Image (cartoon, rainbow, N blue to C red; front, side, top):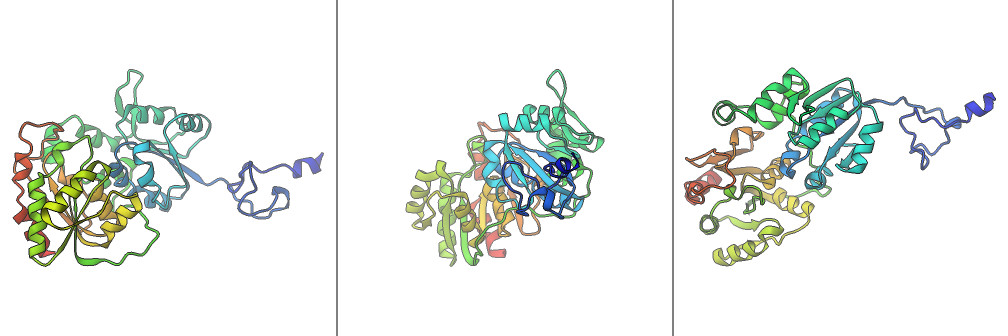
Length: 351
């Protein structure tokens, strides 16, 4: 009987897989490298890719706090950008797999950073005695698990607090919700290739995504900036996503400068990493540029530039009429046109 017990698989070992041999390539009963299951963290954050990327600074802090096994549940919109984060051990897209995983597994701590009600509800049913961030009530309303998350919850319901009083960046808010002090931890976005930066190249990202069209700068402003840059000895290059495919060629032809055709995310990120400066509205490109340590000039109106952590390598040009957080506005594009191409060029010349 004792022999049978000794020959049992060790599902209580950190390295144990079950369906295949573990990384040690040994059977459990002949292995002397048993390791207990470490502290496990569950991070829940859905939403736009840029919003997910600016949540990734929390990962290095969780590692330092002893969480050796970090699972992040996202949605499809943020899956690809999160795949570049080195400290995510298991990246799971919300769906049946995520629901089953949460129903069975237990975590030492759950960090729920999303106000999406499905995400908040997932945090409620997750198995953990330590939950931080947002949850959902039985009537489908948001609530805060911990006192440190109350301020972040208030930001969503108090426009005066959000637009006029708040000076905390999103990474700072995320750390506060998690019960930590923010010390300038960086985004996690690792490129496989080493990129050589060209200081005279200015990447002009014209995309903003479908949800907030009022973030975009008018086409004539982009074209004029490209012309001014070229006359000033810079090499402007228009960049954008699939939604901007026709606009890229149009702007390029009008300004007589190059453009980068819509590409895979890693190629797009490499282009931003190779530039000396990136000019962009509030978008994924802004956060990727910050992540790859390229100087950024952000053009803002409808959203809050105070929520951006610039890491001393970026700054905002803000419309006189912003912020308003309005995705559809009768003042657009005049509100964004108040940011002149000349003012953007002046910022670039100073960098």
